[in-house]
Image (cartoon, rainbow, N blue to C red; front, side):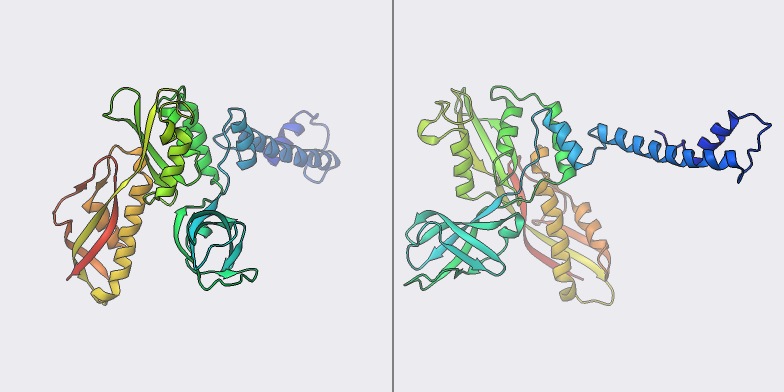
Length: 352
């Protein structure tokens, strides 16, 4: 806004107000005196520009964006702890601590004999990826084996600034009230481990609501995550009684997204490489495309896997000159999924 108020413009404006019978040339006393003031004024205008940018949520930095959003009761999602399944050769005390690599884990709840929910002590997605043998931090008599076997509820990093900015503007457009669609979306998205949600009416009659979720890693949610969301919204044993966040009279059923295995066939024109050398890169490129589709699942009516999108990603791989043919699950066309289905990569067959 004030970018035109630079040093030269300010000095010129100051000198115009001084009588011409005074020496105003560069180096003269009056010029040098004004120049020092002009330099400070230029700095002030730069600061004013920054202040104006910080005033509006469209351009504010993270701290000031958070302050603006707080005025509307919107806060960035904090980093959360991953919950994993630990399998042990014997029952262990709740609160027992174990290590795996550089991370430590805490036993927080017993699932079954020798099976526990283990909370990673480090927040964020880093806790979602390590599995294998656990080492007790303190000696535990009689313990023969201890292992992390699967991820139950994904940990999440602190919400990135631009994601928070988009969500803030979205919440200003939404009108959450009394269990309407926007209300369910906002409440479910605030639950630890949920990455996307679609509410819908069910066929079980008036007052029944279906909630389909995907986890924050954009994979199918575990039974534990589905159970937790169900309990927060509408506990099964008291369905419709208003003991969760769902309004009184709403009978809510929570389910996870359905995955569809997608097999891809590709006939390629290649140069200076073998098909075997390309296999992993091709699979990675298609996996990245499928991940982007799963990430956008909440905002689409249904997912369409497009041949052109797959082929265009492969052309960027060194050694692939062209894609002559491609099929998706045997069909030479785009592949349509239903509103609650997402793709996962099956077999990729390459030909030349």
